[in-house]
Image 1 (cartoon, rainbow, N blue to C red):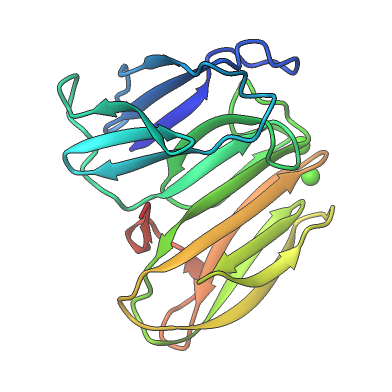
Image 2 (tube, rainbow, N blue to C red):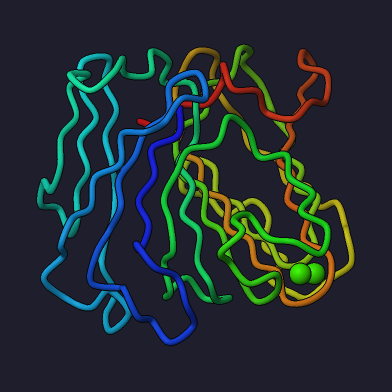
Length: 220
Ligand SMILES: [Ca+2]
Ligand SMILES: [Ca+2]
């Protein structure tokens, strides 16, 4: 499933930032695009974009207001919630939102590229948010591998804080978790120049180190 919110046109001078495009993909099939007039210029102020998945509907929100609903009448809705929400920004400080989608895991090596063809290859940022549900009780170690900066919160605790330009580097932090409980997770990332890499893994005494898999991630 990819639920997507983005400007209809993308450019550095913010033309086209008065509209959003929503779309969803089921097993890779899209074609459910809807253009929404925002009634404001999204580049001028901070606005909150979100969507909510359930088996029977997907709802898109702007500043807490429902702007669009899909119920499957245009094609089957995605059936799995096992994803993390992804906001893509065309600058390094999360103020120029380009698109919202979901990812099945954070395991990206964009090289000298970027997450979207219409995004610049440098000076972009990505924020992933959702929930993580551990299989075991105990102390978990979370690992980021990134180029460049990275910050990670688990259960609203800042466990990795390396908001710096850097070649690919792995950092880690630990937190105690309880099996089967969902915890808020937020990962922030920026690329300044050259390579762009973002990966998120975990391990515990009972859990071999792995990229946090789709079946342990939730949108909400
Ligand atoms: Ca780059
Ligand atoms: Ca870089």
